[in-house]
Image (cartoon, rainbow, N blue to C red):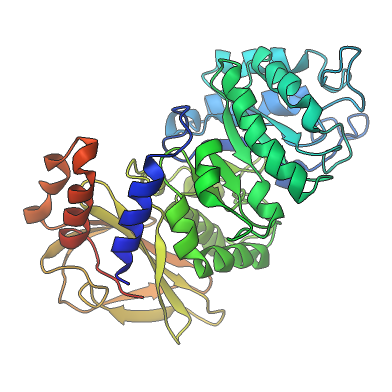
Length: 436
C-alpha cells in the first residue's frame, strides 16, 4: 500500500475521536525526575539528589532562568516515591511531609509563578512501582479531585501491581474523572506498555479517546543499548504507531538521557534527532544544575525543537535500512517542508553515504537544505547526487524546504471538510513518495 495513504486515512480517522481536552496539541516538553534520580529518598545523606521539594524547585529555577522555558520546556514532572506511605485520615494521597514540607500545592504554585507546569505520578494498582500507595479502582475519583485541588497540570498513571482487567476499567475511568474535575489536566497512560504495546491487546483508537500520551515500551536506561532497543521497537512497528499519533495524542518512547553518563556526543545528537522525527515528548531526565555545554546545545537546538513541535503532528518513519548500516528517516512537516535523518548504526569510522533526493522519492525541483546540527545551508536539486558523512552512532539531520511551486498548498485549505484534499495534495506534491 502507498504509505502516505495509510497515514492520511489513519490521521483523518483518529482526529475525529481524540481526547477532547484541548491539551498537548504538540508533544510536551520539560523535565522528568525518574531516569536520573529514580527513587532516591535519602535526603539525610544525599539532600541534593533525593526526591524532594528542593529537587523540583531547583529544576524549575534552571528551566526558568537558563533559557529552557522560552524554547518550550515547561513541564516539571514528579515521578514515583513522592508520597507518604499511607493516605491521610480522609483517604487522600499526601506528600511525604519531610521531603515535601509545603505539599504539592505549594510546589504547583512555585511552577506556575515561573510560567511552568507541574506533573505528578500515580499508579493504576494497589501500589506504585516503588511501593507507595497506588490508585485502586475505588480511589480514582478522589485522587483525580485531589490532583485538581493541588492544581497539577499532568498526571502520569503507571501500571504496577495491577492486571489487564483492572487496567481496562481504570485507565478510561481516570480519564473521565480528570475531565470531571473541571481543571485541564493532561493524561499520560502507561497502559500499552503493560500490554505489549501492540494490537490486538492494545487498542490505540481507544487510547486516542482517553489519553494525551502513552508509554508504549520499556523504560529507558542510561545507555546507548537502551536507546537502540527503543528506536528499533518503535520503527519496526511504525505503521501501527504512526496511525495512533497526532495532535493531542502522542506515542512516548520515554525520556531524553542527554547530559547524563551513558551517551557520547554523537549518540546524544542521534537521540535528539530520532525523538524529533518520532514527534516524541521531549522530557529531559538529567541534572540541569550541572549539565555540560555540549548537551545543552543539543537539547536547546532550535531547529530540532521546531521539527519536534511541528503543528501538523504527523509522526515520521524509517524509509531505508541499507546494508551499509545506514538508515534513513523522514518526517512530513507543515508548510511543505520535511525532515530527513541519516543515521549510522556502524561502530568503525565515519561513513560516506551517497544518494539523491530523487532516490529518496522527492519530486522534481530544487530544495533548500538546512543542516540541523552544523547550521549550514545549501540548495540541492532532486536529481543531483550528494554524499553525507555520518559518524559512527551519529546522525546528519536536515530540514528540507519544498520547491517554491508547491508552497501555496498549505494555505489553500483550512476547514475540516477539506482536510482530505489538503493532505492528498500535500503528500503528492511537496514531500517524498516512499513505498515500503
